[in-house]
Length: 164
Image 1 (cartoon, one colour):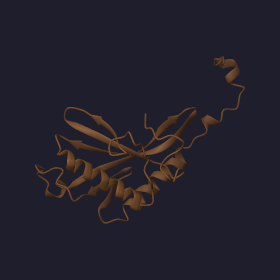
Image 2 (spheres, rainbow, N blue to C red):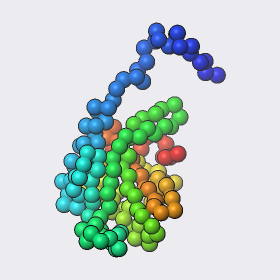
Image 3 (tube, rainbow, N blue to C red):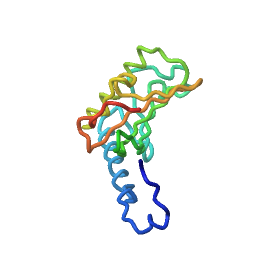
C-alpha cells in the first residue's frame, strides 16, 4: 500500500518529476515538423501545425479548391503510461469531418503513417489500435485520430503495445 506523504515532508524531498522538460519536448516537436515538411506534401502553417496534401478527396464540398485533398495535423506532448512508467510522447492528431468512406480513411491513415516514417520517426505500434497506430475519438460531426511518436523509442514501442 502506498503511503500518502504529508505536505510538510514533501517539501524536504527532492522530486525528479518536477524537472521542466518543456524545452526538450518543444525541440522534438519542431524536429518532427521540420522533417515532415521536407516532403512536398507537407507545409508548416504554425508552430505545432502542418497541412498535408493527400491523394484523397477528404473535403469534396470545400469552397476552397486547395483544401479538397488536405488534412491538418497538430503536434503536442501527451503522457502515455504503462505499469509504473509515464513518458511524454508526441501526439500527431488529425480531425476528419462528417462521414467518410472507411476504405479511403484507412488508406489515408496508412498514407500518413508512411509520411511520418519517411521523416525518420516510427509511430507507436499497438495491434489493438485503429489501423495499428491510431487512437480514435468519434463525435457526431467529426472524428479525431491520434498517433504517437517518441525519438527515445525509435522502434515505436516500449515493453507493451497498448495505447490504453
